[in-house]
Image (cartoon, rainbow, N blue to C red; front, side, top):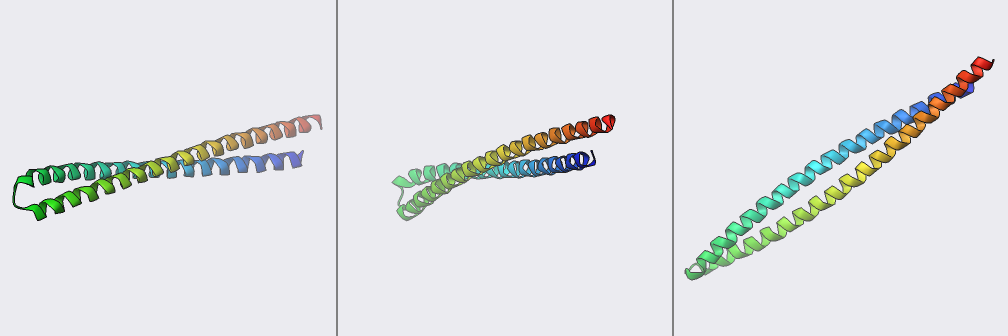
Length: 132
């Protein structure tokens, strides 16, 4: 009976540890999602700047400032590439956040299994105690 109680306490401790780990994973997933959102916002800002620069460059077509126009067109292309890189980074962060959410759900499920094992062992110990 004492062994059953000790085993139940062990399962209960494992359940609590798994739940704690799940909460940590959820916290990391939330932080990653926030980073991804910021990266998307930066990408959007870069895209807006790129479009503005591109518009200015097109307006300068008929002017004699061809060198400035080329610089602005190149800057626009660079910003487009940067925006796309930030979008890809945000997508990767979203994937990682989702992977961590799945891991957290798995740990919570594991925690629930540990708790049910602990309860079952406590019940067995109580039953053994009642019979004794």
